[in-house]
Length: 283
Image (cartoon, rainbow, N blue to C red; front, side):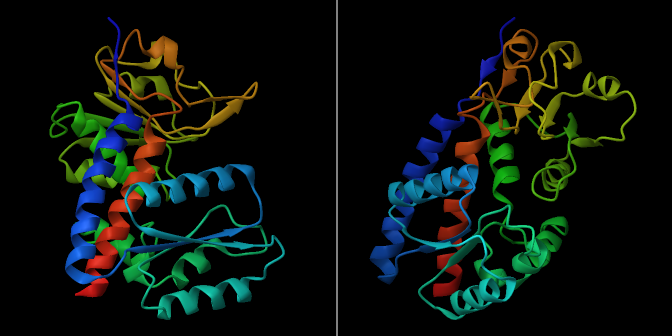
């Protein structure tokens, strides 16, 4: 068998066209243009690339985007002051601080400074708490995009055994929670998990987010599983995921590519959150 590729780029294009329509309708009704501000501290090449993708997505969806570029030596206090000014600015609907930050800045402290109404990344403790309680909130963009991609296959998540490799606050923990809310039975694996292959072979849905290139091989995949590869690694100057893509294609029913899989969907969910933030702040 050969797996069907879940084309995140094509799905994102379709969803962004729909978001653009809703943005245009919102602007027509309110005369307010949804406005996302992205703060970039330093010049990490990967971060610069992500930020460029976010700016392009704003253009595609007819939203306003502002990039605040700060030198790597920016202090924590200076960054907090900028965020507080943006919190108070009624023309700004979404604030995103591109991670990772330089080591002298406390990332969680910065995330906590962004007011919850403008936390379009969905990382604030309040949004995380509301997600766990299944209340209305801004969902973290990568996990929300993953759920959209799985649903796009037409496969019912309820009742399936989902295995997540990775327990980060950005992907592993929140995607596990969202899968649980879709009524999957969820197993979370990590660096201390014994006999990882035993767990992955039971997965109807496997989400891999560990940052190790081509770590998951075809002998670790249950035949017919849906495999979502969140990893982005550079090997020999080429991008690859945490999954051995070519091998896994032979065993899985659906698989996401890298690049062109989860990445475009993450940015698309950010656009969805920014539009929603503008709606809530304009009520």
